[in-house]
Image (cartoon, rainbow, N blue to C red):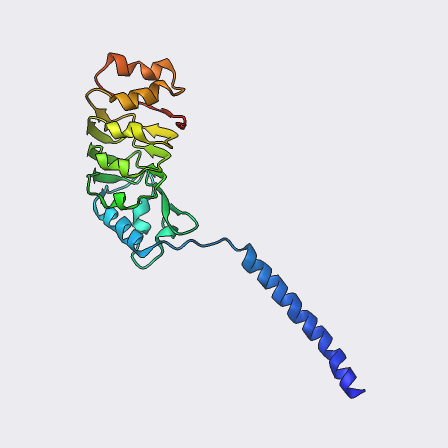
Amino acid sequence: MKRSWNLISLIPITLAFLFFFTYNFGDVLAAPIRHVGHPEQRYAILQFKNEFEIDKPCLERFPKMESWANNSDCCSWDGIRCDAIGDAIELNLSYSCLRGQLNSKSAIFRLQNLRFLDLSNNNISGQIPFSLENFSSLTTLDLTRNHFSGQIPSSLGNFLYLTFLGLSNNNFVGEISSSLAILLVASSAPPSLLEPFYTQPWISVQFPVPTQS
């Protein structure tokens, strides 16, 4: 009888344990998956950070790069988004008060899985490097409102998945390449945006570009 009583007294404890386990296990399953970036990727991003100066004071927005630290996960840094396996696929540094040049040997070109690159509204100068063609999966490229100069690389017309191209408010000169011209003419851009390609020796456009089949 005493043994039966002990077994009965354990029932509430067992039920309480099961409830606690089930409740907390559900929280674990519901928690968002944290994507951890690769160490070599973190190193490349930090190298890219050192290629630029940050204008002081930065009155527009908080410079995203200031949150980047070597002892933390790069997938958690401001302006960076990673996929399920920890590859950086998005770099959004718009309004980050960046000053410098994007050269052809920049560490950013080691992030070959990048799909989204936004460097708009900064003080980046120099020519657009041909190394941009390394981003074969790029869907968005926004370089508007900088100080880029020279000719636009013909390789910009070779992106297979590009859905947005922003180049306006820069200092480009020269003629547009045939590959990019075909992409622009095939797009849904209104005539007012296409006219500069035929009437002026510079290019300043920003509009959606449909995915090529």
